[in-house]
Image 1: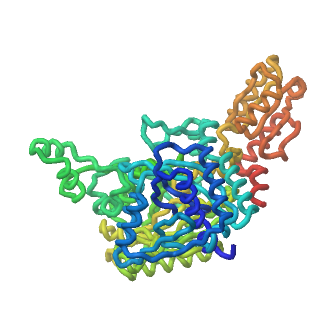
Image 2: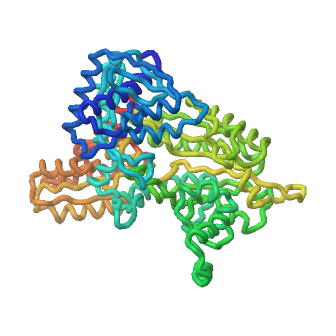
Image 3: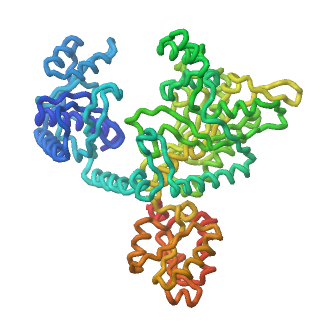
Amino acid sequence: MDSEFELSSMRHSAAHVLAAAVLRLFPKAKLDIGPVIKHGFYYDIDLEFSLTSEDLQRIEEEMRKIFSENQAFERQVVSREEALHLLQKLDQPYKIERLADIPKEETITFYRNGEFIDLCRGEHVRYTSDIKAIKLLSIAGAYFRGDEKNKQLQRIYGTAFASEKDLKAYLLQLEEAKKRDHRRLGKEMQLFTIDESFGQGLVLWLPRGAIIRNELQKFITAELEKQGYEQVFTPHIARLELFHTSGHFPYYKDSQYPPIPDRAALKRLEHENISCDAMIQGLEEGSLDGFLLKPMNCPGHIKIYSSRTHSYRDLPVRLAEFGTVYRWEQSGELNGLTRVRGFTQDDAHIFCTEEQLAEEISRCLSLVQKIFDTLRMSDFRVRIGLRDIHSDKYVGGDDCWEHAETVLQTAAAELGVPLSVERGEAAFYGPKIDFVIHDVIGREWQLGTVQVDYNLPERFQLTYVGSDNQTYRPVMIHRAPFGSLERFCGLLIEHFGGDFPTWLAPEQVRVLVVSDHFSQKASGFVEQLRSRGIRVSKDDHPDTLGAKIRRAETEKVPHMFILGAREIEQSSVSIRSRINKRIEGICGQEEAIAKLQSLIQERTLPDVFVVSTSQ
Protein backbone atom coordinates (compact mmCIF):
# COMPACT_ATOMS: atom_id res chain seq x y z
CA MET A 1 0.00 0.00 0.00
CA ASP A 2 1.33 3.39 -0.98
CA SER A 3 -0.65 5.38 1.57
CA GLU A 4 -2.92 5.32 4.59
CA PHE A 5 -5.71 6.45 2.27
CA GLU A 6 -5.33 3.36 0.08
CA LEU A 7 -5.26 1.09 3.13
CA SER A 8 -8.36 2.80 4.49
CA SER A 9 -10.13 2.35 1.13
CA MET A 10 -9.26 -1.34 1.13
CA ARG A 11 -10.57 -1.81 4.66
CA HIS A 12 -13.76 0.07 3.84
CA SER A 13 -14.23 -2.16 0.80
CA ALA A 14 -13.65 -5.21 3.00
CA ALA A 15 -16.50 -4.03 5.25
CA HIS A 16 -18.80 -4.04 2.19
CA VAL A 17 -17.68 -7.55 1.29
CA LEU A 18 -18.32 -8.60 4.90
CA ALA A 19 -21.92 -7.33 4.67
CA ALA A 20 -22.36 -9.00 1.26
CA ALA A 21 -21.13 -12.32 2.68
CA VAL A 22 -23.49 -12.03 5.66
CA LEU A 23 -26.47 -11.47 3.36
CA ARG A 24 -25.49 -14.46 1.22
CA LEU A 25 -25.45 -16.69 4.27
CA PHE A 26 -28.25 -15.00 6.25
CA PRO A 27 -30.60 -13.22 3.79
CA LYS A 28 -32.83 -11.85 6.58
CA ALA A 29 -29.98 -9.89 8.18
CA LYS A 30 -30.53 -6.16 8.70
CA LEU A 31 -27.50 -3.96 8.19
CA ASP A 32 -26.56 -0.73 9.96
CA ILE A 33 -23.09 0.75 9.38
CA GLY A 34 -19.62 -0.55 8.53
CA PRO A 35 -16.93 2.09 9.05
CA VAL A 36 -13.16 1.91 8.98
CA ILE A 37 -11.49 2.05 12.40
CA LYS A 38 -7.87 2.01 13.47
CA HIS A 39 -6.28 -1.23 12.21
CA GLY A 40 -9.48 -2.49 10.61
CA PHE A 41 -13.23 -2.22 10.20
CA TYR A 42 -16.52 -3.46 11.61
CA TYR A 43 -20.13 -3.92 10.57
CA ASP A 44 -23.20 -3.71 12.84
CA ILE A 45 -25.80 -6.30 11.97
CA ASP A 46 -29.23 -7.27 13.34
CA LEU A 47 -29.91 -11.01 13.29
CA GLU A 48 -32.54 -13.16 14.99
CA PHE A 49 -29.83 -15.38 16.49
CA SER A 50 -26.39 -14.92 18.05
CA LEU A 51 -23.40 -15.45 15.81
CA THR A 52 -20.78 -18.00 16.86
CA SER A 53 -17.10 -18.42 16.10
CA GLU A 54 -18.12 -21.07 13.55
CA ASP A 55 -20.36 -18.50 11.84
CA LEU A 56 -17.44 -16.08 11.78
CA GLN A 57 -15.34 -18.66 9.96
CA ARG A 58 -18.14 -19.29 7.42
CA ILE A 59 -18.50 -15.55 6.79
CA GLU A 60 -14.75 -15.18 6.23
CA GLU A 61 -14.76 -18.09 3.76
CA GLU A 62 -17.66 -16.48 1.88
CA MET A 63 -15.73 -13.20 1.77
CA ARG A 64 -12.81 -14.97 0.11
CA LYS A 65 -15.18 -16.33 -2.54
CA ILE A 66 -16.33 -12.77 -3.27
CA PHE A 67 -12.69 -11.65 -3.54
CA SER A 68 -12.06 -14.37 -6.12
CA GLU A 69 -15.14 -13.28 -8.14
CA ASN A 70 -13.31 -10.01 -8.89
CA GLN A 71 -16.47 -7.92 -8.53
CA ALA A 72 -16.17 -4.26 -9.50
CA PHE A 73 -17.17 -1.51 -7.06
CA GLU A 74 -19.59 0.74 -8.91
CA ARG A 75 -20.69 4.17 -7.68
CA GLN A 76 -24.30 5.22 -8.23
CA VAL A 77 -25.69 8.71 -7.58
CA VAL A 78 -29.42 8.70 -6.77
CA SER A 79 -32.10 11.10 -5.61
CA ARG A 80 -33.38 10.93 -2.05
CA GLU A 81 -36.66 9.44 -3.30
CA GLU A 82 -34.83 6.76 -5.28
CA ALA A 83 -32.64 5.95 -2.29
CA LEU A 84 -35.64 5.56 0.00
CA HIS A 85 -37.45 3.35 -2.52
CA LEU A 86 -34.38 1.13 -2.95
CA LEU A 87 -33.81 0.69 0.80
CA GLN A 88 -37.50 -0.11 1.33
CA LYS A 89 -37.27 -2.70 -1.43
CA LEU A 90 -34.16 -4.18 0.23
CA ASP A 91 -36.01 -4.17 3.59
CA GLN A 92 -33.16 -2.41 5.42
CA PRO A 93 -34.79 -0.24 8.15
CA TYR A 94 -31.52 0.85 9.78
CA LYS A 95 -30.26 2.13 6.43
CA ILE A 96 -33.47 4.13 6.04
CA GLU A 97 -32.76 5.83 9.37
CA ARG A 98 -29.20 6.57 8.26
CA LEU A 99 -30.54 8.03 5.01
CA ALA A 100 -32.54 10.53 7.05
CA ASP A 101 -29.28 11.73 8.65
CA ILE A 102 -27.83 12.87 5.32
CA PRO A 103 -28.18 16.66 4.90
CA LYS A 104 -30.55 17.75 2.13
CA GLU A 105 -27.81 19.47 0.15
CA GLU A 106 -25.50 16.41 0.19
CA THR A 107 -25.21 14.03 -2.77
CA ILE A 108 -26.57 10.56 -2.03
CA THR A 109 -24.50 7.65 -3.35
CA PHE A 110 -24.67 3.87 -3.33
CA TYR A 111 -21.87 1.43 -4.11
CA ARG A 112 -22.56 -1.91 -5.77
CA ASN A 113 -20.35 -4.99 -5.91
CA GLY A 114 -21.95 -8.03 -7.47
CA GLU A 115 -25.46 -8.51 -6.13
CA PHE A 116 -24.76 -6.34 -3.05
CA ILE A 117 -25.55 -2.62 -2.92
CA ASP A 118 -25.01 -0.30 0.05
CA LEU A 119 -25.68 3.31 0.99
CA CYS A 120 -22.18 4.77 1.17
CA ARG A 121 -20.03 7.86 0.52
CA GLY A 122 -16.95 5.80 -0.51
CA GLU A 123 -13.99 5.49 -1.14
CA HIS A 124 -13.33 1.97 -2.42
CA VAL A 125 -10.79 -0.10 -4.30
CA ARG A 126 -11.63 -0.92 -7.93
CA TYR A 127 -12.28 -4.66 -7.56
CA THR A 128 -12.91 -7.07 -4.70
CA SER A 129 -9.74 -8.93 -5.74
CA ASP A 130 -7.77 -5.81 -4.75
CA ILE A 131 -8.56 -6.61 -1.11
CA LYS A 132 -5.57 -8.52 0.15
CA ALA A 133 -4.94 -10.08 3.56
CA ILE A 134 -8.06 -10.10 5.79
CA LYS A 135 -9.12 -11.66 9.06
CA LEU A 136 -12.39 -11.52 10.99
CA LEU A 137 -11.46 -11.05 14.63
CA SER A 138 -14.42 -11.04 16.98
CA ILE A 139 -18.12 -10.43 17.65
CA ALA A 140 -19.41 -7.91 20.17
CA GLY A 141 -22.67 -6.25 21.12
CA ALA A 142 -23.35 -2.66 20.06
CA TYR A 143 -26.48 -0.61 20.62
CA PHE A 144 -27.96 1.09 17.56
CA ARG A 145 -26.58 4.64 17.47
CA GLY A 146 -24.70 3.83 20.70
CA ASP A 147 -27.86 4.37 22.76
CA GLU A 148 -28.68 1.84 25.47
CA LYS A 149 -32.40 2.47 24.87
CA ASN A 150 -32.12 1.08 21.34
CA LYS A 151 -31.84 -2.52 20.19
CA GLN A 152 -28.50 -4.23 20.61
CA LEU A 153 -26.94 -5.27 17.32
CA GLN A 154 -24.06 -7.66 16.67
CA ARG A 155 -20.78 -6.01 15.67
CA ILE A 156 -18.36 -8.06 13.60
CA TYR A 157 -14.79 -6.78 13.81
CA GLY A 158 -12.25 -7.48 11.10
CA THR A 159 -8.92 -6.26 9.79
CA ALA A 160 -7.20 -6.05 6.42
CA PHE A 161 -3.61 -5.38 5.40
CA ALA A 162 -1.65 -4.95 2.21
CA SER A 163 0.15 -8.27 2.65
CA GLU A 164 -0.05 -11.53 4.56
CA LYS A 165 3.21 -10.58 6.25
CA ASP A 166 1.68 -7.37 7.65
CA LEU A 167 -1.45 -9.24 8.72
CA LYS A 168 0.59 -11.92 10.49
CA ALA A 169 2.60 -9.27 12.36
CA TYR A 170 -0.59 -7.56 13.48
CA LEU A 171 -2.18 -10.84 14.64
CA LEU A 172 0.95 -11.60 16.65
CA GLN A 173 0.64 -8.16 18.22
CA LEU A 174 -2.98 -8.94 19.13
CA GLU A 175 -1.91 -12.19 20.77
CA GLU A 176 0.71 -10.32 22.79
CA ALA A 177 -1.92 -7.76 23.76
CA LYS A 178 -4.17 -10.55 25.04
CA LYS A 179 -1.34 -11.87 27.21
CA ARG A 180 -0.82 -8.37 28.62
CA ASP A 181 -4.51 -7.47 28.99
CA HIS A 182 -4.69 -5.57 32.29
CA ARG A 183 -8.17 -6.94 33.00
CA ARG A 184 -6.91 -10.54 32.92
CA LEU A 185 -3.63 -9.81 34.71
CA GLY A 186 -5.41 -7.60 37.24
CA LYS A 187 -7.59 -10.53 38.21
CA GLU A 188 -4.80 -13.12 38.19
CA MET A 189 -2.48 -10.89 40.21
CA GLN A 190 -5.30 -9.71 42.54
CA LEU A 191 -4.71 -6.03 41.82
CA PHE A 192 -8.26 -4.66 41.43
CA THR A 193 -11.86 -5.66 40.94
CA ILE A 194 -14.97 -4.00 39.53
CA ASP A 195 -18.13 -5.32 41.16
CA GLU A 196 -21.39 -4.72 39.30
CA SER A 197 -23.29 -4.54 42.60
CA PHE A 198 -21.01 -1.68 43.68
CA GLY A 199 -21.28 0.15 40.37
CA GLN A 200 -20.10 -0.08 36.78
CA GLY A 201 -16.82 1.68 36.12
CA LEU A 202 -16.04 2.12 39.83
CA VAL A 203 -12.75 0.49 40.79
CA LEU A 204 -12.16 -1.40 44.02
CA TRP A 205 -8.42 -1.48 44.60
CA LEU A 206 -7.24 -4.73 46.21
CA PRO A 207 -4.28 -4.61 48.64
CA ARG A 208 -1.73 -5.62 46.01
CA GLY A 209 -3.00 -3.08 43.49
CA ALA A 210 -3.11 -0.40 46.17
CA ILE A 211 0.63 -0.90 46.67
CA ILE A 212 1.34 -0.01 43.02
CA ARG A 213 -0.91 3.02 43.25
CA ASN A 214 0.68 4.18 46.51
CA GLU A 215 4.20 3.78 45.12
CA LEU A 216 3.29 5.95 42.14
CA GLN A 217 1.80 8.56 44.46
CA LYS A 218 4.93 8.58 46.64
CA PHE A 219 7.12 8.92 43.56
CA ILE A 220 5.24 11.91 42.15
CA THR A 221 4.81 13.50 45.59
CA ALA A 222 8.57 13.55 46.11
CA GLU A 223 8.99 15.30 42.77
CA LEU A 224 6.24 17.80 43.60
CA GLU A 225 7.93 18.71 46.87
CA LYS A 226 11.13 19.46 44.96
CA GLN A 227 9.18 21.88 42.75
CA GLY A 228 7.44 23.67 45.61
CA TYR A 229 3.92 22.26 45.35
CA GLU A 230 1.57 22.28 48.34
CA GLN A 231 -0.76 19.35 48.94
CA VAL A 232 -4.47 20.06 49.45
CA PHE A 233 -7.68 18.02 49.84
CA THR A 234 -11.14 18.83 48.54
CA PRO A 235 -14.50 17.06 48.98
CA HIS A 236 -15.92 14.63 46.43
CA ILE A 237 -19.12 16.65 46.13
CA ALA A 238 -19.80 20.39 45.84
CA ARG A 239 -22.63 22.80 45.19
CA LEU A 240 -23.89 22.73 41.62
CA GLU A 241 -23.61 26.52 41.45
CA LEU A 242 -19.82 26.18 41.59
CA PHE A 243 -19.82 24.18 38.33
CA HIS A 244 -22.28 26.57 36.70
CA THR A 245 -19.77 29.34 37.43
CA SER A 246 -16.81 27.30 36.15
CA GLY A 247 -18.70 26.28 33.03
CA HIS A 248 -18.12 22.56 33.54
CA PHE A 249 -21.78 21.76 34.10
CA PRO A 250 -23.33 23.49 31.10
CA TYR A 251 -20.48 22.46 28.79
CA TYR A 252 -20.14 18.81 29.90
CA LYS A 253 -23.44 17.99 31.67
CA ASP A 254 -24.10 14.92 29.47
CA SER A 255 -20.85 13.30 30.65
CA GLN A 256 -21.45 13.96 34.36
CA TYR A 257 -23.49 12.24 37.01
CA PRO A 258 -26.95 13.80 37.42
CA PRO A 259 -27.10 16.65 39.95
CA ILE A 260 -28.52 16.00 43.41
CA PRO A 261 -31.19 18.45 44.60
CA ASP A 262 -30.67 20.21 47.92
CA ARG A 263 -32.72 18.42 50.60
CA ALA A 264 -34.56 21.58 51.68
CA ALA A 265 -35.31 22.50 48.08
CA LEU A 266 -36.52 18.96 47.41
CA LYS A 267 -38.98 19.14 50.30
CA ARG A 268 -40.28 22.45 49.02
CA LEU A 269 -40.82 21.01 45.57
CA GLU A 270 -42.64 18.01 47.02
CA HIS A 271 -44.92 20.36 48.96
CA GLU A 272 -45.60 22.40 45.81
CA ASN A 273 -46.17 19.21 43.77
CA ILE A 274 -43.53 20.20 41.21
CA SER A 275 -42.88 17.58 38.51
CA CYS A 276 -39.59 15.68 38.14
CA ASP A 277 -38.98 17.35 34.76
CA ALA A 278 -39.40 20.80 36.31
CA MET A 279 -36.96 19.88 39.09
CA ILE A 280 -34.34 18.71 36.57
CA GLN A 281 -34.82 21.86 34.52
CA GLY A 282 -34.39 24.01 37.64
CA LEU A 283 -31.14 22.24 38.52
CA GLU A 284 -29.79 22.62 34.99
CA GLU A 285 -30.77 26.28 34.75
CA GLY A 286 -29.38 27.12 38.17
CA SER A 287 -32.68 28.27 39.67
CA LEU A 288 -32.72 25.31 42.05
CA ASP A 289 -29.98 24.56 44.61
CA GLY A 290 -28.23 21.22 44.28
CA PHE A 291 -24.96 19.32 44.49
CA LEU A 292 -22.76 17.52 41.99
CA LEU A 293 -20.23 14.72 42.28
CA LYS A 294 -17.23 16.69 41.15
CA PRO A 295 -16.18 16.07 37.54
CA MET A 296 -13.12 18.31 38.00
CA ASN A 297 -10.84 19.33 40.86
CA CYS A 298 -10.11 22.83 39.59
CA PRO A 299 -13.07 24.69 41.22
CA GLY A 300 -11.96 23.43 44.63
CA HIS A 301 -8.40 24.61 44.07
CA ILE A 302 -9.70 27.95 42.85
CA LYS A 303 -11.65 28.38 46.09
CA ILE A 304 -8.55 27.50 48.11
CA TYR A 305 -6.58 30.14 46.20
CA SER A 306 -9.28 32.77 46.71
CA SER A 307 -9.62 32.03 50.44
CA ARG A 308 -6.98 34.68 51.12
CA THR A 309 -5.41 37.70 49.46
CA HIS A 310 -2.29 37.11 47.38
CA SER A 311 0.59 39.39 46.53
CA TYR A 312 2.78 39.05 43.46
CA ARG A 313 5.44 37.90 45.94
CA ASP A 314 3.31 34.79 46.72
CA LEU A 315 3.13 33.67 43.13
CA PRO A 316 3.36 31.14 41.71
CA VAL A 317 0.95 29.24 43.99
CA ARG A 318 1.12 25.53 43.16
CA LEU A 319 -1.70 23.39 44.64
CA ALA A 320 -1.63 19.61 44.18
CA GLU A 321 -4.13 16.89 45.04
CA PHE A 322 -4.76 13.24 44.31
CA GLY A 323 -8.37 14.13 43.66
CA THR A 324 -11.05 11.63 42.70
CA VAL A 325 -13.53 12.84 40.08
CA TYR A 326 -16.62 11.29 38.53
CA ARG A 327 -17.73 11.16 34.90
CA TRP A 328 -20.75 9.42 33.39
CA GLU A 329 -19.25 7.25 30.66
CA GLN A 330 -21.54 5.11 28.50
CA SER A 331 -21.56 1.52 29.77
CA GLY A 332 -20.43 0.21 26.37
CA GLU A 333 -17.32 2.39 26.56
CA LEU A 334 -16.18 1.23 30.00
CA ASN A 335 -12.99 -0.84 29.88
CA GLY A 336 -11.24 -2.12 32.99
CA LEU A 337 -9.02 0.61 34.43
CA THR A 338 -8.58 2.56 31.21
CA ARG A 339 -12.17 3.86 30.93
CA VAL A 340 -13.98 4.24 34.25
CA ARG A 341 -16.60 6.42 35.92
CA GLY A 342 -14.59 7.32 39.00
CA PHE A 343 -10.87 8.03 38.76
CA THR A 344 -8.14 9.79 40.70
CA GLN A 345 -6.06 12.45 38.98
CA ASP A 346 -2.59 13.46 40.09
CA ASP A 347 -4.00 16.92 39.68
CA ALA A 348 -2.45 20.32 40.28
CA HIS A 349 -3.25 23.91 39.48
CA ILE A 350 -0.70 26.68 39.26
CA PHE A 351 -1.64 30.33 39.69
CA CYS A 352 1.07 32.56 38.28
CA THR A 353 1.78 35.88 36.63
CA GLU A 354 1.97 36.38 32.88
CA GLU A 355 5.76 36.65 33.15
CA GLN A 356 6.01 33.33 35.02
CA LEU A 357 3.89 31.36 32.56
CA ALA A 358 6.61 30.11 30.21
CA GLU A 359 8.85 28.89 33.04
CA GLU A 360 5.97 27.14 34.82
CA ILE A 361 4.94 25.37 31.61
CA SER A 362 8.53 24.17 31.16
CA ARG A 363 8.59 22.87 34.75
CA CYS A 364 5.34 20.97 34.12
CA LEU A 365 6.77 19.38 30.99
CA SER A 366 9.98 18.45 32.81
CA LEU A 367 7.90 16.62 35.42
CA VAL A 368 6.21 14.53 32.73
CA GLN A 369 9.61 13.90 31.16
CA LYS A 370 10.91 12.68 34.56
CA ILE A 371 8.10 10.12 34.79
CA PHE A 372 8.69 8.88 31.25
CA ASP A 373 12.46 8.65 31.80
CA THR A 374 11.99 6.69 35.03
CA LEU A 375 9.71 4.14 33.35
CA ARG A 376 11.67 4.35 30.09
CA MET A 377 8.66 5.40 28.08
CA SER A 378 10.89 6.94 25.46
CA ASP A 379 8.57 6.42 22.50
CA PHE A 380 6.07 9.25 22.88
CA ARG A 381 4.78 12.26 21.03
CA VAL A 382 3.23 15.56 22.01
CA ARG A 383 -0.21 16.55 20.77
CA ILE A 384 -1.02 20.26 20.99
CA GLY A 385 -4.72 21.03 21.09
CA LEU A 386 -5.61 24.48 19.79
CA ARG A 387 -9.00 26.09 19.37
CA ASP A 388 -10.96 26.10 16.15
CA ILE A 389 -11.38 29.82 15.45
CA HIS A 390 -14.65 29.09 13.64
CA SER A 391 -16.26 27.38 16.65
CA ASP A 392 -18.26 29.10 19.35
CA LYS A 393 -17.62 26.52 22.07
CA TYR A 394 -14.59 28.38 23.44
CA VAL A 395 -14.64 31.15 26.01
CA GLY A 396 -12.19 34.04 26.46
CA GLY A 397 -10.58 36.76 24.34
CA ASP A 398 -8.47 36.29 21.22
CA ASP A 399 -5.36 37.91 22.73
CA CYS A 400 -5.30 35.47 25.66
CA TRP A 401 -5.79 32.47 23.41
CA GLU A 402 -3.07 33.52 21.01
CA HIS A 403 -0.55 34.12 23.79
CA ALA A 404 -1.34 30.81 25.55
CA GLU A 405 -1.07 28.86 22.30
CA THR A 406 2.28 30.46 21.49
CA VAL A 407 3.70 29.65 24.94
CA LEU A 408 2.58 26.01 24.74
CA GLN A 409 3.93 25.47 21.25
CA THR A 410 7.29 27.02 22.14
CA ALA A 411 7.67 24.90 25.29
CA ALA A 412 6.63 21.70 23.50
CA ALA A 413 9.12 22.31 20.68
CA GLU A 414 11.94 22.50 23.24
CA LEU A 415 11.29 18.88 24.29
CA GLY A 416 12.70 17.70 20.98
CA VAL A 417 10.10 14.95 20.46
CA PRO A 418 7.60 14.41 17.62
CA LEU A 419 4.62 16.73 17.93
CA SER A 420 1.38 17.41 16.13
CA VAL A 421 -0.93 20.42 16.20
CA GLU A 422 -4.66 19.69 16.18
CA ARG A 423 -7.13 22.49 15.68
CA GLY A 424 -10.39 22.12 17.59
CA GLU A 425 -8.92 19.86 20.29
CA ALA A 426 -8.43 22.53 22.96
CA ALA A 427 -10.47 22.53 26.17
CA PHE A 428 -13.26 25.09 26.15
CA TYR A 429 -11.22 27.30 28.49
CA GLY A 430 -7.75 27.07 26.95
CA PRO A 431 -5.18 25.25 24.75
CA LYS A 432 -3.51 22.08 25.98
CA ILE A 433 -0.65 19.66 25.54
CA ASP A 434 -1.37 15.92 25.70
CA PHE A 435 1.31 13.25 25.92
CA VAL A 436 0.69 10.17 23.78
CA ILE A 437 2.98 7.20 24.32
CA HIS A 438 3.59 3.97 22.44
CA ASP A 439 3.94 0.92 24.65
CA VAL A 440 6.21 -2.07 23.98
CA ILE A 441 3.82 -3.59 21.43
CA GLY A 442 3.13 -0.35 19.60
CA ARG A 443 -0.22 0.73 21.02
CA GLU A 444 -0.91 4.39 21.70
CA TRP A 445 -2.08 5.75 25.06
CA GLN A 446 -2.98 9.32 25.94
CA LEU A 447 -1.66 10.11 29.40
CA GLY A 448 -0.52 13.37 30.97
CA THR A 449 -1.83 16.81 30.09
CA VAL A 450 -0.82 20.45 30.60
CA GLN A 451 -3.37 23.20 29.94
CA VAL A 452 -3.27 27.00 30.05
CA ASP A 453 -6.37 28.82 31.31
CA TYR A 454 -7.09 32.55 31.29
CA ASN A 455 -10.83 32.01 31.58
CA LEU A 456 -11.51 30.39 34.96
CA PRO A 457 -9.56 33.16 36.77
CA GLU A 458 -11.90 35.59 35.00
CA ARG A 459 -15.04 33.61 35.78
CA PHE A 460 -14.12 33.40 39.48
CA GLN A 461 -12.69 36.92 39.63
CA LEU A 462 -9.31 35.75 40.94
CA THR A 463 -6.78 38.44 41.74
CA TYR A 464 -3.35 39.18 43.11
CA VAL A 465 -1.83 42.49 44.17
CA GLY A 466 1.04 43.65 41.97
CA SER A 467 4.16 45.59 42.91
CA ASP A 468 2.27 48.80 42.12
CA ASN A 469 -0.53 47.89 44.59
CA GLN A 470 -2.94 47.37 41.67
CA THR A 471 -4.96 44.16 41.30
CA TYR A 472 -4.30 41.75 38.42
CA ARG A 473 -5.65 38.41 37.18
CA PRO A 474 -3.37 35.40 37.63
CA VAL A 475 -2.95 32.89 34.81
CA MET A 476 -3.99 29.34 35.69
CA ILE A 477 -2.27 26.12 34.58
CA HIS A 478 -3.96 22.72 34.85
CA ARG A 479 -1.58 19.77 34.82
CA ALA A 480 -1.76 16.04 35.53
CA PRO A 481 1.40 14.09 34.55
CA PHE A 482 -0.14 10.62 35.02
CA GLY A 483 -3.54 11.78 33.79
CA SER A 484 -5.47 9.37 35.99
CA LEU A 485 -4.00 6.78 38.33
CA GLU A 486 -6.50 4.19 37.10
CA ARG A 487 -5.57 4.56 33.43
CA PHE A 488 -1.88 4.87 34.23
CA CYS A 489 -1.92 1.68 36.30
CA GLY A 490 -3.84 -0.11 33.54
CA LEU A 491 -1.16 1.02 31.11
CA LEU A 492 1.68 -0.10 33.40
CA ILE A 493 0.16 -3.56 33.86
CA GLU A 494 0.06 -4.02 30.09
CA HIS A 495 3.32 -2.18 29.40
CA PHE A 496 5.26 -4.47 31.74
CA GLY A 497 3.04 -7.50 31.17
CA GLY A 498 2.68 -7.76 34.96
CA ASP A 499 6.47 -8.00 35.44
CA PHE A 500 6.78 -4.77 37.40
CA PRO A 501 10.13 -3.24 38.30
CA THR A 502 11.07 -4.03 41.86
CA TRP A 503 10.07 -0.64 43.29
CA LEU A 504 6.49 -1.08 42.03
CA ALA A 505 6.04 -4.83 42.56
CA PRO A 506 3.37 -5.64 45.17
CA GLU A 507 5.58 -8.48 46.41
CA GLN A 508 9.25 -7.67 45.87
CA VAL A 509 10.82 -10.93 47.00
CA ARG A 510 9.70 -14.35 48.16
CA VAL A 511 11.79 -16.45 50.50
CA LEU A 512 11.65 -20.10 49.41
CA VAL A 513 12.42 -22.56 52.20
CA VAL A 514 13.85 -25.82 50.93
CA SER A 515 12.77 -27.83 53.99
CA ASP A 516 10.47 -27.43 57.00
CA HIS A 517 13.58 -27.77 59.19
CA PHE A 518 14.65 -24.27 58.14
CA SER A 519 11.29 -22.53 58.46
CA GLN A 520 12.03 -20.85 61.80
CA LYS A 521 15.40 -19.53 60.60
CA ALA A 522 13.71 -18.30 57.42
CA SER A 523 11.12 -16.41 59.48
CA GLY A 524 13.91 -14.42 61.11
CA PHE A 525 15.32 -13.53 57.71
CA VAL A 526 11.85 -12.49 56.48
CA GLU A 527 11.45 -10.16 59.46
CA GLN A 528 14.86 -8.69 58.72
CA LEU A 529 13.80 -7.94 55.15
CA ARG A 530 10.49 -6.48 56.29
CA SER A 531 12.26 -4.21 58.78
CA ARG A 532 14.27 -2.78 55.87
CA GLY A 533 11.05 -1.74 54.11
CA ILE A 534 11.04 -4.64 51.64
CA ARG A 535 7.74 -6.30 50.69
CA VAL A 536 8.37 -9.98 51.32
CA SER A 537 6.56 -13.28 51.85
CA LYS A 538 7.68 -16.80 52.75
CA ASP A 539 6.87 -20.08 51.01
CA ASP A 540 7.48 -23.00 53.35
CA HIS A 541 4.77 -25.25 51.93
CA PRO A 542 5.62 -28.97 51.85
CA ASP A 543 6.32 -28.90 48.10
CA THR A 544 9.47 -29.45 46.08
CA LEU A 545 11.70 -26.45 45.49
CA GLY A 546 10.84 -26.66 41.79
CA ALA A 547 7.13 -26.35 42.57
CA LYS A 548 7.78 -23.30 44.76
CA ILE A 549 9.85 -21.66 42.02
CA ARG A 550 7.13 -22.31 39.42
CA ARG A 551 4.49 -20.88 41.77
CA ALA A 552 6.51 -17.70 42.34
CA GLU A 553 7.09 -17.29 38.60
CA THR A 554 3.41 -17.84 37.79
CA GLU A 555 2.48 -15.21 40.37
CA LYS A 556 5.08 -12.87 38.81
CA VAL A 557 7.15 -12.38 41.97
CA PRO A 558 10.26 -10.58 40.65
CA HIS A 559 12.86 -12.13 42.96
CA MET A 560 13.32 -15.33 44.98
CA PHE A 561 15.68 -15.85 47.92
CA ILE A 562 16.28 -19.57 48.38
CA LEU A 563 17.26 -20.91 51.80
CA GLY A 564 18.54 -24.45 52.15
CA ALA A 565 20.96 -26.23 54.50
CA ARG A 566 24.07 -24.65 52.96
CA GLU A 567 22.58 -21.13 52.99
CA ILE A 568 21.44 -21.44 56.61
CA GLU A 569 24.84 -22.70 57.71
CA GLN A 570 26.71 -19.91 55.89
CA SER A 571 24.16 -17.09 56.56
CA SER A 572 23.90 -16.74 52.80
CA VAL A 573 21.11 -16.86 50.25
CA SER A 574 20.74 -18.16 46.70
CA ILE A 575 19.16 -15.42 44.53
CA ARG A 576 16.94 -16.28 41.59
CA SER A 577 15.40 -13.39 39.65
CA ARG A 578 12.72 -13.22 36.97
CA ILE A 579 13.54 -9.67 35.91
CA ASN A 580 17.15 -8.71 36.84
CA LYS A 581 19.53 -11.56 36.05
CA ARG A 582 22.65 -9.65 37.09
CA ILE A 583 21.83 -10.01 40.79
CA GLU A 584 21.56 -13.82 40.64
CA GLY A 585 23.95 -16.10 42.51
CA ILE A 586 24.89 -17.03 46.06
CA CYS A 587 25.88 -14.24 48.42
CA GLY A 588 25.65 -13.21 52.07
CA GLN A 589 22.26 -12.20 53.38
CA GLU A 590 23.30 -8.59 53.97
CA GLU A 591 24.64 -8.36 50.42
CA ALA A 592 21.39 -9.83 49.06
CA ILE A 593 19.39 -7.19 50.94
CA ALA A 594 21.69 -4.46 49.61
CA LYS A 595 21.22 -5.68 46.03
CA LEU A 596 17.45 -5.57 46.45
CA GLN A 597 17.52 -2.13 48.03
CA SER A 598 19.67 -0.85 45.16
CA LEU A 599 17.10 -2.04 42.59
CA ILE A 600 14.36 -0.29 44.56
CA GLN A 601 16.17 2.98 45.16
CA GLU A 602 17.42 3.24 41.57
CA ARG A 603 14.02 2.19 40.21
CA THR A 604 15.79 -0.31 37.96
CA LEU A 605 13.70 -1.66 35.08
CA PRO A 606 13.32 -5.37 34.29
CA ASP A 607 15.87 -6.80 31.85
CA VAL A 608 13.11 -8.26 29.67
CA PHE A 609 11.48 -4.85 29.38
CA VAL A 610 14.71 -3.25 28.26
CA VAL A 611 15.08 -5.92 25.57
CA SER A 612 11.50 -5.38 24.36
CA THR A 613 11.86 -1.64 23.99
CA SER A 614 15.10 -1.90 22.05
CA GLN A 615 13.63 -4.06 19.29
